[in-house]
Amino acid sequence: MHSITSIRATTILTGTIGDPVAHIQAPESMGQWFAQHGIDAVWLAFHVHPQNLPAFMAGVRSLENMAGLTVTMPHKRAVVDLVDETSDLVRRTGVANMIRREPDGRLVADNADGAGFVAGLRGSGVAIAGRSIWLVGAGGAGTAIAWSVAQEMPARVAVTDADPAAAERLIDGLIPAFPAVRFSTRRPAPGEVDIAVNATPSGLHAGDPLSFDPTALRLDACVVDIIMKPPVTELLQVAAARGMKTVPGQRMLDGQLQIYADYLGLTSEPAGGKPNRAEPALRPTGT
Image (tube, rainbow, N blue to C red):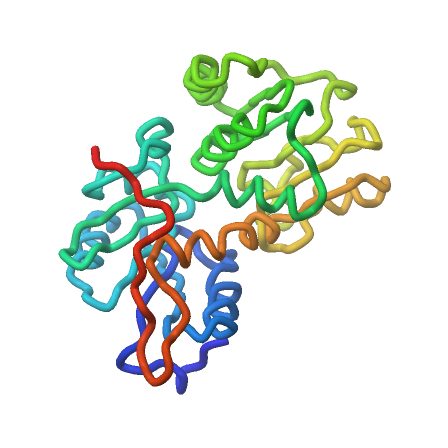
């Protein structure tokens, strides 16, 4: 992990922007990843209030040693209007969680939330194909997750949200794209759920209400929480106490580490040199 003494004039800057940022785990996880792969880069947390987001993004354009950023709440939608180029997924969903700074200062956006979520489930031994999914939360992360989950061909996906209109908008985009999957904004009956996912901020703070009651689900259902801090939320504690399979939010981040590095063009450090800036594995198409 990086320390103050390990940061050099050649160190590439990366980080995560959000409001708040105290819960963000990427600085530790990516710092360890960079160290393990011999990459001269540092990952920071940038606390940016929404009204300051345009000014911050303008500053990113001017930083020659900035590789790019990831984005967390509440900026995943707002940043889309502040970049120059987006992937097809970002255009479809209106949500971005990765921004790459090109050498000429242009900003390019994509989204790895869903890919990381699916990779995290796969790494935890949880299959999606043919299963019935209940996704609670249709915000920035929930939207990306829904699209990636749908690509895995589940039998059914139910999306619910405190704002029913948000769930409806998400489903309206998914239905024509994945005609073989059954979508609904109806809260599913407990016996219909194979995998239940909390994609809301509920659980970040002590005393937050549960986004759903895992004790109402079948014992063989899997409960997933995308919140990374605390590492084991109350939702997961309640589910685990019943003997249910659980997947914590860290698994989603673990599934994104290589994607982030590839997208930002960071490869292993050559002897005596700074990191190579490789062509990213995910190359978005222009708007």
